[in-house]
Length: 497
Figure 1 (tube, rainbow, N blue to C red):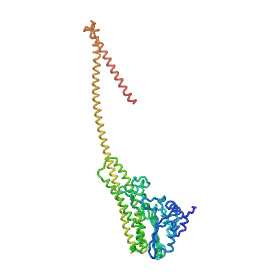
Figure 2 (figure 1 turned 90 degrees about the vertical axis):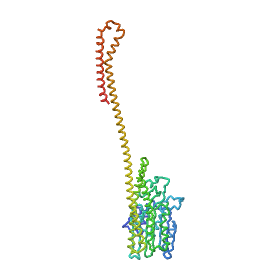
Figure 3 (figure 1 turned 120 degrees about the horizontal axis):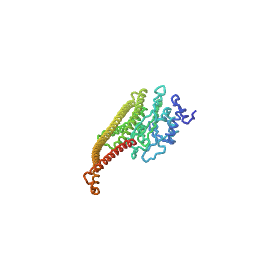
């Protein structure tokens, strides 16, 4: 049996815990991990509260020691609106040092439990919150017999993409874990030519409204990086402004509209930058002047990586916008169910729905555009490869032509050498024929023989003939034997080699 932990005991003690939906051990384990990884030691949350009678607005930052007294005051004087905003550490200026746990939500374990109990937060919402990076559903429920005594509870997660100034201008976005793996759509996307980063995060919202007390309570968990405090604080600033403005409809659910309109605008700005980057890539690929050097290869490699990363992100954007559309549709159906079809809030939500639909259509268009640009890139790569193959083929043809010319020259040289060989052979044969005769004639003409009376007589010519003919025959026989012997040695050498 699993060991009981404070979170497990806490969950089982909550009135919102429904064992047929959630398992307290799994939920407790998930919250233990969430506590260790994302909850800070100190509390610093923002609260907006309006008095039910005077409508006076109070905005305070609650530290660890302030929260219990603030919530107890709520029991004594039930407010009309009671909103809590939980963020990460917000950097107000570029020089502010970030604490070591700056990436954690600025709420402690004890403060979170107090807030959950005070707002009667759904256990299902807590489980989804502990796994905010995974796909999560949404809930729109009411409790009670009649509308006049109902408790309305809604919770959902809003996926957001915002464009922020490039945070790595001096580096190629390859040193950080997210920058080096932009193929992962859960990481940020860097747009080099627009000089911005597209950052993604989640906003978790839990809203409840007691119709008998006309009291609305909401908790917002914003997981955005605190370096962009102005964006993080925009929804709470807008809610504060709306509560001060007398033109704001008295509908208790107006906070949904504030969050949806801010998020829709952020999405549109981010998608506009993505589209501008796609246009830049398309223009670069459509340039007619394409040089054949290493820079082209570098452009194709980097361009292919960037476009595939953008394709992965855009596909994820479509999924997230589908979720936003579903959430807005659920809100619209919820207000219809509450028999509030004529409320200004419902008309405004329908307007936001139309904007989200248009934004989602824009994402689908970008997805197709990315595929077209990738096809254009592959076409350009194919053209470049074809040109290089043509150059290689031309070089091969030229080399073959040179080789053919060398072969022709070699053949001509061989024929010339053969002719020379025949001529030399003829000369050698003639020399072999005349050399014995001339040699003996020269010897017999020497004074030693010419002084001899017998040899100097014409009748002694037979001596020259007797000496010349056998000697010439022997020379020819030796030549024939030598050639035959050398001809027999050549095949033997070829066989050994």
